Length: 353
Image (cartoon, rainbow, N blue to C red):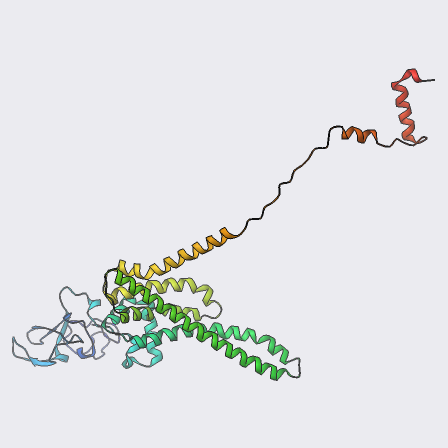
C-alpha cells in the first residue's frame, strides 16, 4: 500500500496522513488481495484479515477479541501478511474501466502506460476482473488512432494535383470539391476496413491461443485471453507517427506487443509461463513456416532460362594457304612489283638474262 500522491509506503503507519508528503489516506480507499493484508487493532496489534472481494475485513467495525477496544477499518494499522510480497498485495484494476480515476482521455493514456511499462500490474488487474466489451473498445481506439495520421498524410499528398488543377482551370473549384470528398470517403473507408481487419486478426490469435491452452490442459476463460490481448496493444500507438510509424515502429512494436501479451496473460491466467509462450508464439511460427514454404515453392516453379554454349570452330586445314595463294598480286610498274622482281632474281640467279 503506497501513498497515491508520492508513492511512499504506508505500512505500519498509525496516523492517517502520509509521513512523506502529508497527504491524507484511508485504508478503505484501497483494494487488496484476499487474506494478503493484516489489519491490526490500534490498541493491542491483534491481526485480522480481509476476506471480501475487496480484501477488506467484514464487518468494517467491531470490537477487538483480545483487548475489547472498538476497531474501525479506517483507524486500523495495516501491514502485509507474512510471505506475501508488497507488489502482490494491492488489488489492481484496469484504469480504462475505472471511471473514478479521472476522465476518459486520462484513463486511456494511463492504460497505455501500463501496457508499455507495467504489464505485470495489468495482468493482475485483468485477473481481478475486466470487462471484455470495454477491452474491445480500447483496442479499437488504439488501432484506429494509429492509422489516422498516416491516412491524413496520404490524403494530403493525393490532393496536391487537384489543388494545382484548381488554380489553373476555370472549373477548378468544382473539381477540387469532388476530389476532396472522394478522397475523404475513400480514406475513411480504408481506415475503417483496416481497423476491423486488425481487430479480427487479433481475435483470431486470441482464439487460437485459447484452443492451444486447452490442448495443454489449461482451462482459461475467453474473457481472460481476450482482455489480455486487447489491453496489450498499447505499443501500436507508436504507429501513429506520421510516415515513419509503419517503417520505424512496425516490427519492433509488434515484438513489444507479443512480449507484453505473454507477460499480461501469465499473470492474468496464473499458469506456467512456458505454456503461455507456446500458445502465443505457435501461430506466428506456423505462419512463418508457411510463408517460407510458399516462397520456396514459387522459386522452384519458376523455369530457369537455358543458355546455349558458345562454340569456337577452327578453320578447315589448308584454308589459310588458299587465302595466301589467292591473294592478288601487285600491278606491274608499281614499287611493290619492282621489289618482288628483285627478290625473284636474288633467289633464282639462273633465270637472270
